[in-house]
Image (cartoon, rainbow, N blue to C red; front, side, top):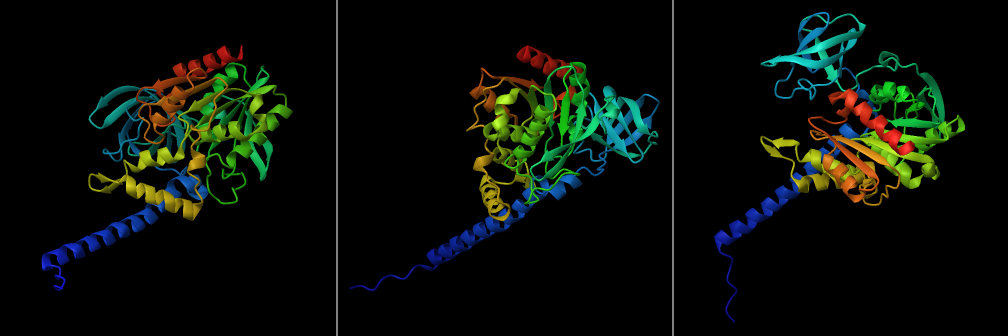
Length: 395
């Protein structure tokens, strides 16, 4: 028999190159997956990190100020805060004070002049660094609402909440997102109070002043729903005949899981969801697709997939269980509002839910609004939309 031909040198080099490329691809995905699963933990899963995210983080400087006008400029002109030049109402924080900014009066270059009102503290001087935020009020009192501090007995310990009295026997229970702050929903309280609804603005596990989840992590509804159930129980034991659940962002996921698991689901008359996180996996995919990796290159889907698997191994993220759209049966009247410039929770998930349940879900798109900024973009219109919806479905 003829001797077997030896591989040609060029073929051997090619084979060696392919082996090295395979090793590099594996190393890239393993190392990158580990890194980005850590980014996921820092930005979305760690209760400690999410509480710290409420710390003062200036994004604008004061260029000029009068009694009722302020001129602001983004600290990073390539990444300005979403509401800098949009109409509507936003909060403005600085060291030593807090106020609200209203409509845009003029815009010249990088400078934006807006209506301005000091709420607390002293006026900021020219050059002061400040933070523009959708959290418009830093307490119910700032919004002109008399709220009582109450304690809700939860499954893991006492939960803080604010209660505002009303003339109706349907209470609205408000559930914040992963900012870990009840302040998110204070802006809705005046309109709900004026419409006669008692409100219970709740805290839940991992919030400041509330027990931590045993894992120390946010579970996007899988454990938090039990704290919502305790809050609904509190409402029913203190005068509520039934409830409306109103939540934003992750709060929408908490509500969705509650509706699947809680014995109190039958006591819910309606849902109001603001940019709800109804599929955490899709949200991570959407954000990763815009995450810079190298120059204009963003994180590829293959790397995102590996990072998600590592997040499961490292932090116990149950991705399939965090898809609330697929198993959800929306059988109560529901209003979903969502900004079409949302860069946190993709509006596509809200559209999908609305298309699946056209008979029970009313879907409203807020033009130009970023994440949970529908109210900020047009407070009067949004308040009228929500209270009008509730009046229609509860009559």
